[in-house]
Image (cartoon, rainbow over all chains, first blue to last red; front, side, top):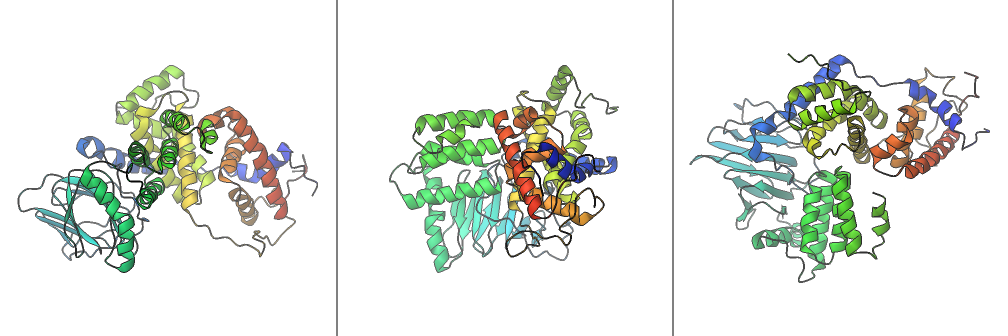
Length: 300
Length: 201
């Protein structure tokens, strides 16, 4: 072939056909895209109390939301990444995929989610009004809040409250009131689910009940690992929310503080918050100077 | 009535950009409209270099401006707006690539095959298969190397701006660029693609 691998000109000649294929956005498409962007920008000022969408659900692999819709339900199906849409009750709803409602009147909103993720913004409801999200593993009922329910294939459910409070009733178990903070995981009532609940849901519940992350003592590796898994899910699914999650884990200390500290800086970097990332990286290096990852963070 | 004449193009003076940024931070929708009008095509073009299909590139474009709206108050002014938008674009596009499962026609050794092993890109510039092969070579590069190569060779950005976009030192960009070129040529050779001799085209 006779091509010098260091020949820059050879690369340019090789890529010339691709360079000539310049992707173009027509003015008409630009206008269409802007309409979509504007649609997603405008609701924010009207809902200043609901901006804390950062704490979205964690462990779910976002897929389809499949719910049964009542025949008289007039709401159109939602599609992925659409702006929040209003419901007759005054609530707003945002989903990862198409969704239907089992009930959507002024007094009763009921959504059944078998898989996928749904975020609800519910204003303070009047007496008699109810808002429920049902999953294979739990029923989540709300009285004025912003929260996310994410359902994994198989029914495992993750509930994250951004503000307010929800009451989670795992199938066959007592209800638990959940406020803002770590994600609560509810596993289906199977043997495997029970084991996984021990490793995940219990952590979130314990942390929530105590009102703080109390990983420092005792050094429970299983629980710490569960938190790390949650954090990695944040990294993958909701990178914008990941820095806040890791910051809480770092503050808690515990056996995986080094990992959490690194993840915190990395999450900030990947969220584009570079100045904060450098500060966090410096804190990481100061706290864990022997870490094999210390050198890596100096390049950020 | 806003006429969309804000000086947003790449040659915009710094003070005009500063004024624009303050309007963006204030949530001035006309400023956001102007920003979109001025930069959406650039963002789309860069996104399209990284993702498959026009629809996905359009989705990335929308995500970039929504993210920009959300985080404009964190924009420090250390780089130009276009650079900042490119940074978001590259991050979003690479993230999508990580999530996507790609289907390829590959041989038993994992190498994509062509029915015309002697084809050169210039000779078959109208041949979509050759272009797809070339694109396949790019796709197989390590993402960070690919990003540098695409931004430099296809988008014509200098290495200093690429360093700003990727948030790494310029020396790192130069290293990645060199290695990306070597890797690309090696991949192209294995697929039977070769550049024409200089001046032949």
